Length: 224
Image 1 (cartoon, one colour):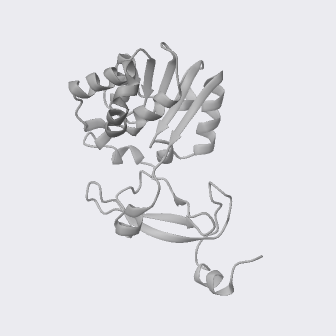
Image 2 (image 1 turned 180 degrees about the vertical axis):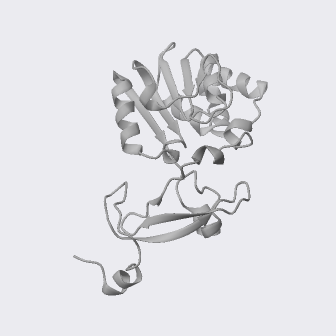
Image 3 (image 1 turned 90 degrees about the horizontal axis):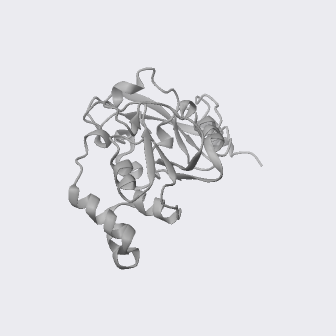
């Protein structure tokens, strides 16, 4: 069953492309402006008419310039109290589950993976490495990679999924996969780098209230 002629006419000037999620080739093109840092640089996005997936049309060659030192995942302050609260949760989860829910969805998702102490965990797109630090403090062998991290450390590297070594019990993407150019290839690399009983954890944002409210000023462009 085809699309109504009115919709086809409305989209006649949109270059056909395949949706990265469902493979549909019909959609609507939007112009978003970069608003997180107020540059207002325009970017073309494509919205799939079948599943509603939003994807950037052309990833800029200078994508790294949109992740400056002031980007939130690099500049976020780290609290000693926050670290202590997570340690307490790990030791007495049944008493502190409300704290986990309030303290961070990423940590809660990792805990649901039910890892053994010493398990090898890779945080892809880790930013400054707050989550890596927390997970190491509760006994997990956590490391992080990020293409745009400014300062490397013993556990945080400037690297891509393609270049990391195999042997991970958990590879995770917390609001990171949507920033990558070829998500399917990245997930294939993750599969190949996991242990045979390993887990891949993916958390992505949903284009819901922010997209409906801000539309062309949606601050995610061009990072999401």
